[in-house]
Length: 217
Image 1 (cartoon, rainbow, N blue to C red):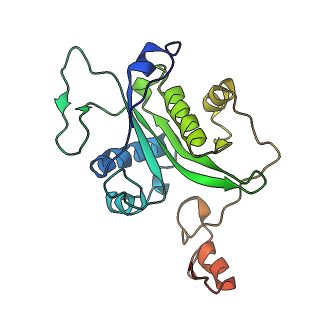
Image 2 (image 1 turned 180 degrees about the vertical axis):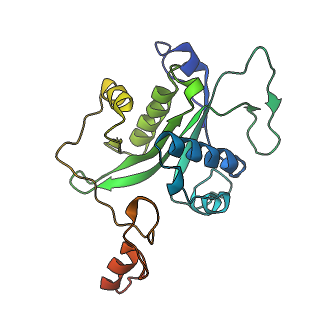
Image 3 (image 1 turned 45 degrees about the vertical axis):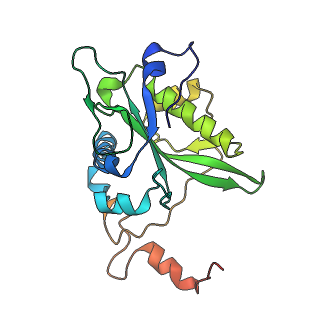
């Protein structure tokens, strides 16, 4: 997906290229995930691999590959000092430049509104590309995606200590959901931030013992 934004936006953001990631971009996606985790002091919590990303992400291939999340990648305008190398490992006609960042998202649903929405799992812009409006550009694309599917809300979570991001998002019109507390059941089996698994398996596995399994048919 390549698109433009209003001329009033920054020149850098308006000139940047935004497109959906393909299978060939998986190494880049994984690298960005690790960079984001390092920024959040959570590198040890990353268990994603190129193989698991290929299996679980959606890509605009033909026919469309089923998956659980989609990824937008943003690239800066081609440098005048170093001509870009033509892409040879995917179907995009865009030049191969260093990726500036990503937005990884999936669709969710509001029962009260009976309407779909978009949940932003990760938004990350590499430090050297910040201040160019790339984060705002990616959020703008997600706002358009939300409207495209008939959705009424775009939402995401922010670490409480990340004041720069909180101020940035609030400046764009996002509001804090102070009345809500995030809840999670993990299946980490004693690893990372959810160290409650132990020898009997993770909390997700134990909770699943209350279910019997329902077939989609």
